[in-house]
Image 1 (cartoon, rainbow, N blue to C red):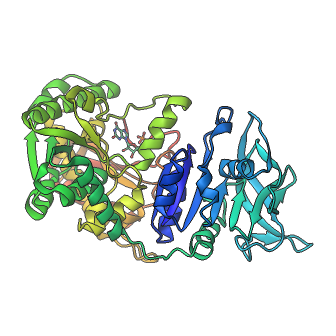
Image 2: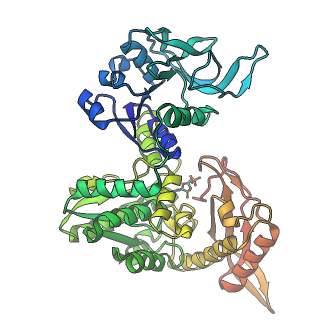
Image 3: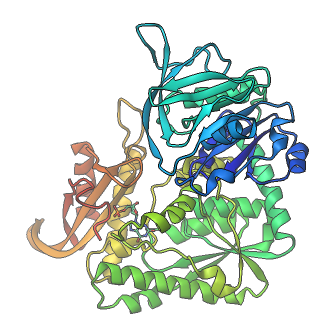
Length: 524
Ligand code: XMP
């Protein structure tokens, strides 16, 4: 196993992810663990992470000295390189100014770490690497025993190595994808230099996570708000695997769910997996509070508030519960940490259940905190959840509430649910020739939007005067920007035909051809 010591970088989890991708087991621990801890951990190798943006106060963060005395390979990344240099007798020039950016690094000499790894070579035959570099503080004097492994024009020592002791360090970040060969370097370190066996699989993760959950929870009870989304579903399946009936899930139906959602969740969790699920039909309450409200943000707030209220009331009934489980995944963790400093403008207030654990006096259980979305999906499949559920598009917390423009009415929700189900069904059923994938899998998010305006149509011999539905399908990797999907006309035609014929009350279907920005993905 590999030990990753964390000096507080935002991307430390990415190091762990790369190691897991190499099928090697690793654990992240804070940089200030004791020497004894490091010895008892008995790692095959150690990676020292970078540190957070401002290193001003970070100069005195150190790795336990045992790291350098165990006789195992050590890889220092960014700040990890500086502390390695510092602790082993090299020289570091600290600066409180730091830049993060693209750089081309020249490799020097033949080191086991970089041998035959390069993006291109110069006319003189030097191997060059395209990397994501962190400038500012830098190593200016090599520690005894080290040789220079890499450089850039502005950073003489961008990499260093002591091959006898198998210590390597780079000033750039091999864990981010902008460093094109970064994955190769980490693989080289972990598999070849440390000699770790690539025998770790998702199944092992389950066993470890199950053990951790049991340790944490003991014989106490846990509640979890199940939404039917990927994260809460995988969390529920995992926790249930660990503690069985000590877990109770609460599924709140706010009346703004997709067609058959409640049924599907109960079928999957209560029937198939045997999870205790309390199904709360709170649609009356939600609809009541939403009556007459047209402002999108006001609607979100009401839905968020009512959700918390309903959930809280249910949680209070479970008097033995000591834990609140949440499907928080790693990107949520960084987002909320980053949000404090970056202060992004609120374009749309996303509802979450933050604050709940305090008011309920519950401890927080977040077993997916270290995982990225695709790892969560892989875990879900390994836990036996159906592929179709695990690879679903995201669905916003306020549900159809933000897909019915203006005032939300039960009647509108009924029409929208059925139109949306037809759209999704056809996307799933239509396979794109060249890729062999369904259009559902080729899009990142797709749904119908209800427009509360009426237009004239003709059906059979009669005139109709009915509502409009807009179809939206986008492709995006991060949901921050998105392109509208170029769905085949034949598919759009089939969807439109079916909606107008099968959903009485809708006589016109349009397709949204706006990208984000300037439009957003949802219409509200
Ligand atoms: P926008 O519309 O901002 O959406 O381009 C980006 C992503 O966020 C989802 N979204 C929400 N999710 N509560 C949520 O849980 C919300 O209020 C909310 N609003 C938007 C949206 O579905 C898309 O995936």
